[in-house]
Length: 293
Image (cartoon, rainbow, N blue to C red):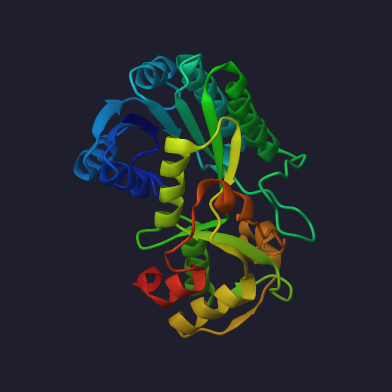
């Protein structure tokens, strides 16, 4: 199949593109910049020039392909409302091009935070703020299942880790530790983050594209929950720094996330799709050293 991918040159996309090509698919990647176009070409894909706000381009890319994976998102916390609006318009455009075709549309979203237990694929909490808009975008994508689109949502955990992760939360924490001289956590550090290796996440995106039933919600979760103090401890040891509790405000926007227990399960995804995480977990990946090179 020819698959149209937004975000093909990004962190997740850089794992999804080779996963698809190695499985025999062809890739058409959306690229706004020359550097993004070059990365897609080097990976073996074809390039469609444009951005998420080029709705005619999105419709053309989707209409001319056998399926769509939507990964791109404007990760700018200073304009989160605008980012959600752009994402919603992009999903609407992609979906319109696939109506009544039976073709797959797979979009990326995030695992929910459920107090006191691991979030499951069946949980659909009432989000607040900009996250509410992104959750509504995911619901809109799933609603396309009733209009002849084999739509599904792959929820990603807080950490999608691996060699080459330069802008995720873990590199940010490594940078903050270097700046402050302490590898910090909030409170007693018992809050847990779910995590997955980028290659395992890429395989789930491919499986969703190929076989997920219409309207499926899937969790790309390898580690159900890693205590913040545990990965802070590895970061500190690898950098030769102490690990200690720090005020939430020392972490900027990450402070609110570090203090919240947000574990997530992938049990239903494994049962439905036959998917298993086989790459190193977060702590083992940190021990490999590439985050500290």
